[in-house]
Structures are given as structure tokens and as C-alpha cells.
Image (cartoon, rainbow, N blue to C red):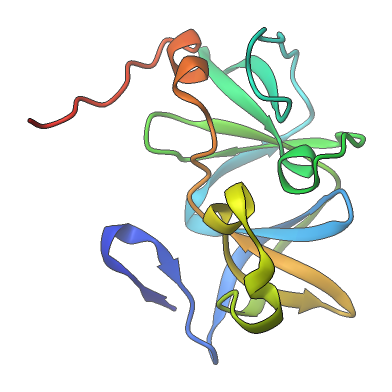
Amino acid sequence: MGGRPGGVLAPALDAGVVALVFRAGPFYCALPLGEVIETMRPLETRALAGTPPYVRGLTILRGAPAPVIDMPRLLTGVETTVDRYVAVRAGRGPIVCATGEVLGVREVHVEPPEGPAAVLAGVSRTLIAAVGTLGTEPLLLLHSIAAVPDEVWEAAGQTPPENPS
């Protein structure tokens, strides 16, 4: 597994990535294991007005507020059933990803999103590090869960990073 400046995951074509695999609507998704804090049953989540539809709201994770991102809605725009929460490390604090079924830890083989997968656009393009398959199904290797708007971080009690001038 290789890396790019800034710590962004850049998987090698012939190397596997150890990742937590889960469902997000019609897709299988994987998060590099180093980004995962824990998985759990869904926690009580309080909605936040004025946030994008993929932000379910805030939950309390280990005594601190954390934003909850609806992964199927983020990736597809469609709301689906949530089976599990997956807490992940993010730049300003932990984020909780609302997901479907968690399949467990697996080594996944993926390629950078080029060729047919290059049609990915918008938030999906910034979220998807690589594309592969799980059996005959598409698998998206995710990275940098940074799709949380500043106002959500602020509501969670996290201050924005200072801009160097």
C-alpha cells in the first residue's frame, strides 16, 4: 500500500488494503482499518436543522458529540436502513458513519478510480480512493471522510482549524 503527500491513501495496484467492509445502500464500501475506531449498534442521534441531507445529526460517542453521516445517502442520495454505526478518525474529531450491514475486516484489492470509474464526481470523487469488487459486486474504498460541513463541526463543539496567514 502506498501513500501520497498529506496522508491520503493511494493503494498499489497489486497490493491489498486491510479494511473494514460494510454495505452502504447498493454498494459495498471499505474503510482502511487504520481510520476505524469502532463499530456499534446505532446510537441515539439528534437531527440538526440546516445541514445537508446526508448529515443525520449528532450523537454522543464516548462522552463527546460527534457528527453522524448517512453513508448510503452521501454516496447515492437515497436514504436506506441503517444497521450499524462505524466511528472513524477525521481531521477535527471522530465522525460516525451510519451504514448497512458490517461484513468485517478483509483484505480488499482495488485500483485508483480511473477509466470507467472516473465518471465519479462531486463529493463521491473526493471520498472514493479506489474501486474494486467483492465477488461480483462493486466495492468502493473510501478515504478522508471530510464531507462534514463546518457548521456541523461547530454544532458538535469542534472549532474550525485556524488559517495560517
